[in-house]
Length: 324
Length: 291
Image 1 (cartoon, rainbow over the protein chains, first blue to last red):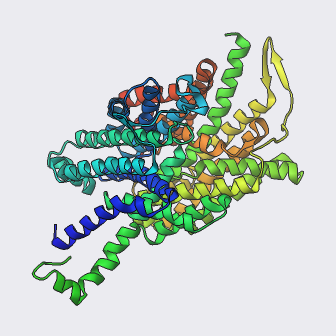
Image 2 (cartoon, rainbow over the protein chains, first blue to last red):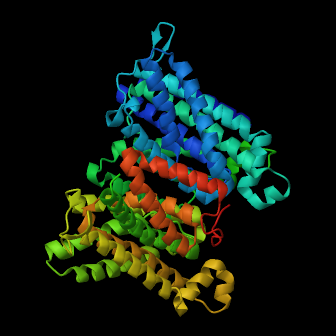
């Protein structure tokens, strides 16, 4: 990583840390929401890398959320419930995906959609999950006697989860797994022909995604203090896709976060009537898909970067390096 | 379970199954021929039902007019949808066009919500009343739905044997070779879209007198059609037909025992089936994108 990049990253981390001190609590809340949706988007982009679009995000998000809600009401520590939720998501996922993944991308996609609906029905119909009213009054997460109640504290907790997510994904991308995933994502048949076990690596990818989705669910309940079926519905899956499309799904780490940032903060300033909000967002997304299919980051790759490389000052800054 | 209840549940299952077969056939047609996963398929069904309400209740026209209106207007909307939003982005691949249909479906949902202020509308029964054989009661409306579904599926079967239907099958198998034979891909695509959306539209028109119109009926039927596609095999029309009725019947009986958890029951059954027969009931589906 170049010196410029390291300095930029350092500045970014510093900004993230001091951010809540300079803004009102509402903005911090929006940031918390952005973090949650970033984590969901990361999981989607993570699995897209192996050529599998997943529509089952709300289902596993809900597994984490409901596990945390149920176990915390019994007095268990938040952190343990998050771990248990993740493990449950992985085990259940292994059961379901052992059938879905070998069948291919389209069955996986369809099973994902049906899973979301089935889990949504289950959360709403079964009294254990509080039926349609959900589980409310979940106690806040604690470390010792310290309670995570203030928005700022919850924001830092979210940053911790997001950072954990990013670090793990980054390390995996640069590992043997990452190379296999890249191969599968580039050309499945070629990857198979050189001996990459497509099903095994896809399964690993999806299950790791499941774990972090459940973690995101636990975090959500940690700050929302409730688990409701309406949250873990198909609409959330679409929202995640919106963020990814806007950000650019070829960038597995930055795309979802940028998309979530843009899509969460901009509507705060572009006051559209609530009833037209959905139409407006959907129309924007369709336009982006038609004219900017690789999202903002894709546009940056295709237009901004080549322009940047042609600038003398940029070349001077990167003296001796090969650009592009 | 009494005989009367059994036949009632069976009739409900066949009725729902007929609708699943219609909508799933449209879905599998667009998937097989155009390699597009039309997320808005269920929404055309919903629009067909609401259009029937508008024609029969608001305008006071006879029911057959509503049927024709639903078929033609949904077919036309499908063609406009194709040329407006699908034709150009098709080159960008499967995922992009699928997402476009997802968000188009969202727009249809929201516009419908704003237009038809109430969520539910009732359409008067076409043939009211019922008849009994022994202790079993048969409702004319439900039998009409089942009958219409079968007639339309037969019409579709014969349509696929016509020149254009055969061209569609050829394009589904191998687009390049089909175009080498002089088959115009764009023409095939908009015809496929028209047929697919028209099937959904007329399905909605058929079910409206029995079940009324609800804004959520589009998404609900789409989810069931996914299961139908998995059971019947993607790209297989006969698979969609058989699987449609099968899923409808299983769902109806499962509802009797587990209520709204019947979707989970179907999902488990589909999972077991997929484990033993990955290609669906009818084995060899037409080639579809992605593996």
